[in-house]
Amino acid sequence: MTQNHSMKYVAHREGRLPNPRYLAVQPEVLQIPDVRVAFGISNANNVEILPVEEAVDRLDVEVLYTRTNWNDPEVNHRLRVAERIEVLVPNSVPRELILGYF
Image (cartoon, rainbow, N blue to C red; front, side):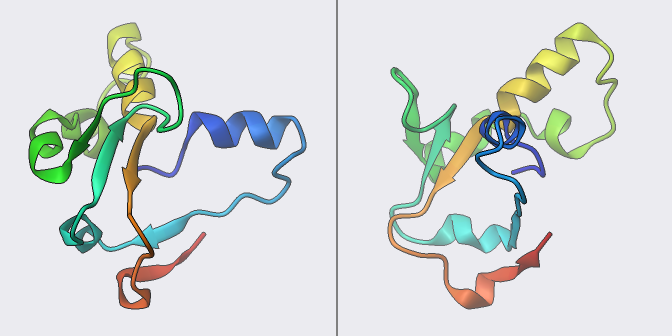
């Protein structure tokens, strides 16, 4: 959902991920059958994982995709929570949905 993820930060800082890359993926990936959305790090305990149809209304798109004041502690907390959201694709992302990497 973003160009940041808390797990990447930790792995990079510890030297386990020296040259991290992100894939830019078309939003149509959400239309792949059986895709799920994890509201947190997906392999953590008690993370809620929902079908896209149920999850989409709960995504904090304001803090993800509009200009907000990240210096505001409440907004910053919302951003940190939103950056942990993971999209879980059951098999693979079709090549035509991958725009590139950065």
